Image (cartoon, rainbow, N blue to C red; front, side):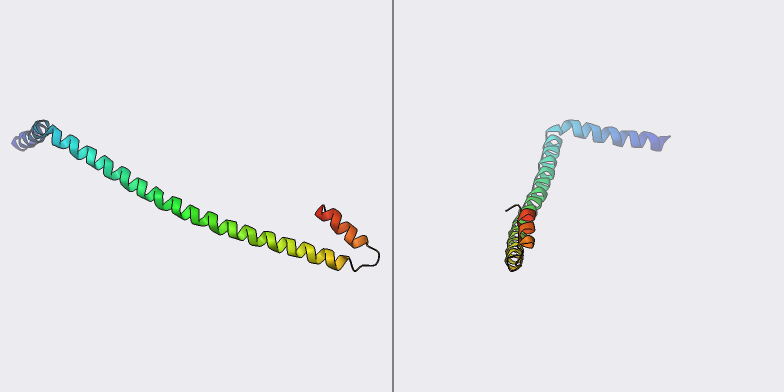
Length: 98
């Protein structure tokens, strides 16, 4: 039982010490909170940067695909225009809504 009372004394000593130096503990908790928020903010900054790079890459890919589609349409229409009946070219224009 004496070891139990010794633990209580140490626990009360910690609480007493904490109450005595409550300003230091408040500062410690505030600084810990600020540090955690700063780390979270830094992580979000890197995520935003990565997403901006993805946006740039996707925009470039979109532009490339758009150019390829235009080239394919133009080549198909040019090849279809060589058909003497004009039926294939007419269907392609209807398909491409031109």
